[in-house]
Image (tube, rainbow over all chains, first blue to last red; front, side):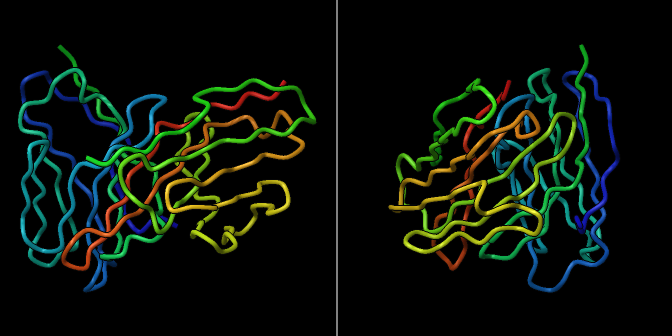
Length: 110
Length: 118
């Protein structure tokens, strides 16, 4: 069973920030939070991951709460091409197998 | 970033035939590769974990004699769907894991293979 919960779907206007929440209340001390996305009929694409500090890269920012029980993926300026299913996954430094939940369907509209 | 390829990208076959899907890590060596299956409107389901030179580890409910996995080198893993039937029609995705610095690994996914069994 997936150890994270995400909203089923979200909408965002093009050019605005998309904030995707994820709850992981049972996260253990050595587990990282990973975010992937899957555009229709493609393989998942890595976005970002973090342990406890906030992280930022060229694609997104990851905000992890102090108690690590939830996190938010932020796409600062969403475009139509960001429309995809976004998966929040827990894993260790050695990934091992990833358990995908249902993810959040993000729809970016003009 | 690292690239993982899959071949073929889509295949249509008759019921009862076998289909081989290749997964290659193009610019890195993968200690471990994973095979996933995804049915329409569903999430990815892990089928098996494959380590180079050893037998694959299958998830519960996945028939190892039906889904044959070979990981002969650090850059190639193959999944063979034997005696395919229409219920095996699905999107098959592989991923390859490699070591980064600092004790961390990273996993890269292939583009997927769409299998349709008539």
